[in-house]
Amino acid sequence: MLVMLSIKNLAVIEEIDVYFHKGFHVLSGETGAGKSIIIDALGLIAGGRSSAEIVRYGCDKSEMEALFELRSTHPVWSTLARLGIQGTAEEHLVIRREVTSSGKSTARINGQLVNLSMLREVGEQLVNIHGQHEHQSLMKPERHLGLLDTFADVKIGPVKLKYNEQYSSYIKIERELRELQENSQKTYQMMDLYRFQLEEIAAANLQPGEDEALEEERLRLSHSEKMMEAVAGGYHNLNGEGTMGAISVAMSRLSDISRYDSKNLDPLVEQLQSAYYQLEDVVYQLRSYQENIEFNPGRLEEVESRLNMISGLRRKYGENVEQIIAYYEKIQRETDLLENKDEHLLKLEAKRDKLRDQLLETGERLSKLRREAAGELSKQVEAELKDLQMQRTSLQVKIDYIADPNGIEWNDRRIRITRQGIDTAEFLISPNPGEPLRPMGKIASGGELSRIMLALKSIFARHEQVPVLVFDEVDTGVSGRAAQSIAEKLFKLSSECQVFSITHLPQVACMADHQYLIEKQIVGDRTATRVVSLHEDGRVDELARMLGGVEITEKTNHHALEMLKLAEARKDGGSAYAVH
Image (cartoon, rainbow, N blue to C red):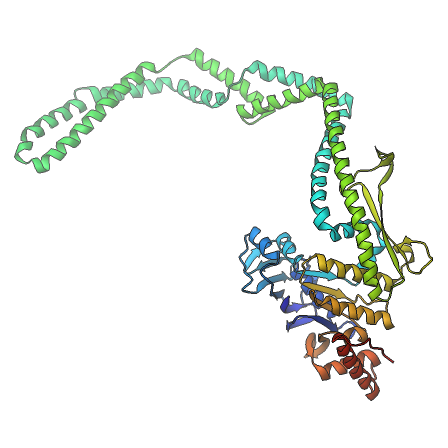
């Protein structure tokens, strides 16, 4: 669960530290007080996108920090281990996010810097936020398939993963086929160019590393006279009567007297002998090298000509001989492909057809699992809707192939293959008995959409292990008994995870285990938002304000107190309460 949230310099919030508990939390206050900013901060903690506009005016940066307390079996720990982030259930999980006034963002998990994608991957396992208008997504049929797949992810997930892998292979082959089939004239032009290039490179008969070896040979041939003169002079200087003879005489004299002081003279004699033998070896090598020095203007001309030819090829095909050879092999393959286009087309088409058949078989398995899940989801949603004063509502998830007159023939239908599968899904509802099932977007009211989304969230909470569930005015568009049923559902949901709700309805607020008042105050010449944890008297006053507006009377206070008592009775398992 979320233990603490610290916010500094975020919009109108200067600095707050809020501590939370298990159960159902309500955030209430006047419109514009900053309730949604608290939720925005949680969204940023969970990896939401940031911008410079969120930084409080006149400040360098916004800072947010959240402490989570999680059991050792929660899947986030394995995610952290995979990402190389240290953490243990014996300590709090700490997430920190900073956004500067220039728009730059940094994030840390347990003190380790992470990028936004890593933060989002972790955040999605910790916090699920239902925004004010998220229930509108129910009016978009293209979103329904994703909701169904989320519901049955345990069964559908592995098959969908296999389908996506096959789809990627299928699309790759389709792309190769299109490229091979398009623009025949360009193909023939390329073949002529490739043939010329192949002949030019083949005629050169290049060898790997040849250019480097020729450069070295040219350097030697260009300076052969100077090398001959230097080597001959060196050989004469070492092998004449001077150096070697002098060292030989010195060795002989020192050897004669070394017996008189062997301790000091023997090491010198050994060093002198070693130097003599090394110089002798150098003399022999210089003589051999001198004999092999080549003074050959004709060979130099050949090397120069070869290098000029290679230089010309390098300007066209690569920076060195290896790259030229690699280019030759590449265009040789492409030429072979172009010259045998029909044969390659047949091979690719056969491969494409095989992949398509495998893809359709997997897509059919996916479709079957979705149809099974659709029936189960319908039953569970209808059961949840009974608790939300929609007991007469029927809901069905309609699964059908994606029709396409120009698509692939499958099961006597023309269908389209997409990355998500071969299906479409659409939620159909009938709010009243006797009425036909119709698309949700056409007949559901705002209040009905809110309750259907709450029903889905309640179901998903049992499948997912997200510990923090946040609702930003999920009760929009409802009142009376419907609002009361939403409050009861949120309270019931809080037994499975920590629930937060922003609300303006007293029916919802009174069912909370913990209530926080969000209010603005003027400090000096600046506006700041503060968060107050309300206890009994404070809750009565806030509920009275929610009931009566500006004018708070003794009757509204009494009414508020009665609502709290009835709510407590309801939470303890008593009879349903009513507000008169």
